[in-house]
Image (cartoon, rainbow, N blue to C red; front, side, top):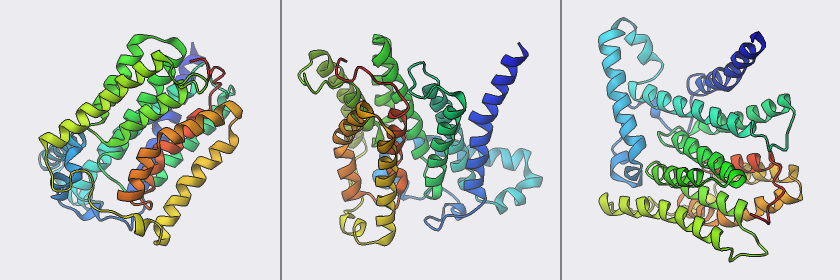
Length: 330
């Protein structure tokens, strides 16, 4: 009994407390040279008048947390207000609280993924090293803090967990939950499309690409993404409906953007080299299905925002963690 309690407490310290401390240090221990969120008094207008307007769940949470935190400071922590504001505006603290909450949830989901019975890595200590490595990857890209990326990472990892569960158990409830996760997360960020890429990489039988069940299941996922994606474009019309600008030249001429690209490429290649033959095949399929996302960030994203590569790197990390013996029999 005492051993069980000790293991749970140890797990709580490792999965929740240690990641939170790392995340806290990344937001308050040093300042990013990339953005000025720390000095913004309120949400900038571009979050509601550009492509960011389509990220309705993060924007809603941001406004609610901002108002709630303002209320708490004014009514219950007035004596500490100067100290609180010395370390960032209410808006910055709101961004931190939202991201910290979903970062912890992401860490918990990662722990669930790494403790599945089908893990390639069986040693408990090694699992924790892998978990810590994934956490460091998430923390290090927070030099570009936004109100949506950590929410998107949580939903993406949740989708990955549901995909793995469906792969092993074939429960229709897991597939429906996966479709619902993709549907909801599309209101967060377009990263949700990568759940379709992971599903395709895991289930596609290259020897039988017309496998009926695979096509039906993938079709459901595509519908779950496309419906909210285009509904948002219709309900919230913007002058720049799909992007703010085309940055492909900057991406291949700026040393910062080239550094971000190398981070993404080397991060994925590092895990690819660790995989066995079956895992490498799945990783290649995942890259193929991820091409629309990768091409989109090449044209309209900035490589220096290495957070854009984070879901792809985390997926490579997860794939090499698993025994996937039946890659061609799904």
